[in-house]
Amino acid sequence: MKKIAFLFSGQGAQYPGMGKELYDNYEIVRNVLDKVNESVNFDLLDIIFNGPEEELNKTENTQPSILAISFAVYKLLECAGIRPQAMAGLSLGEYSALTASGVLQFEDAMALVKKRGKYMQEEVPEGKGGMAAIIGMDRENVFDIVKQASDFGAIDAVNFNCPGQIVVAGEIDAVKKAVEIAKNAGSKQAVMLPVSAPFHSRLLKGAGEKLNTELNKMNYYTGNIPVIANIDNDYYNFDREEIIGKLTRQVCNPVYFEDIIKKLVQEGFDTLIEIGPGKAISNFVKKTDNTVNILSVQDEKSFDNIKRFFEID
Image (cartoon, rainbow, N blue to C red; front, side, top):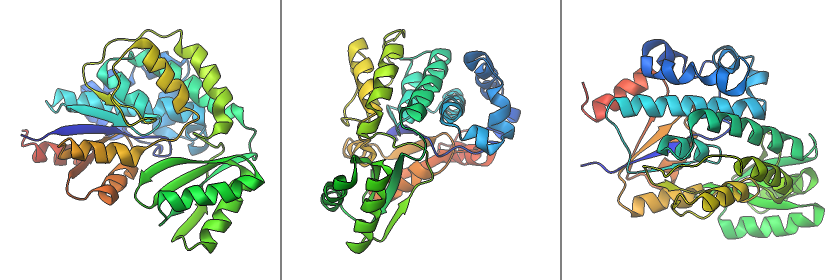
């Protein structure tokens, strides 16, 4: 018997046309995605399927778009009889996991992440903040780089994606300095990322406070599948105050995705399925532990592959 966990995509995985093939071929996907525009009060589905890319890449559009596709894929797998024993998501993907578990209603989650995206984008003026990926260095070295770069502005290590891949974020001068220091210290690669805000850094504390106001207005339900949180690598107990607290802190605190993957492997999960657009999570899993099965669902072909894997007609 396979022990299955679902891992939901984060921001950056989006592309125009994502989910369109599944929408055209499966009623369950249409049932989910036909509710999208009503949830956000504009024609987001057209942007998801047709672009333009600049509109899809606006954070307040990206976040509900990825959640919508992720939840639709989740329902497709559920319909096929594939259910996980645990779930997690990469940053934004945590909302997809909570929605799939039943903690949040889909329409509520869509409206919530649209606001989350807006608050995160607005908190730091464009050009004032940035992010960079540092490849080929361990955590201790990156923490040392961040400490040195902090003389040039606020900066944090924010995404621990997999061994040797850590993202830093903060004020632009400090992030650029971190890239320079990392290169001189022998990193395999250190590059600025094409994002417009320093996600998960201390600079987004104000965005977290605004989101907290919205989170306090929400209805929450007891989840029916365990979900692991980004900020502490621990399972939710689905208490209302705990949910609000973790999602508030997640905006301006690091994402420990490598730790989540390792936790799942240690707990005996042997089959991980990436839910949503892109293949970033699959790559993180392979670099963290290559002993587990990692699958993803992008289109009809990849869905057929999963059905074959599980021997489903």
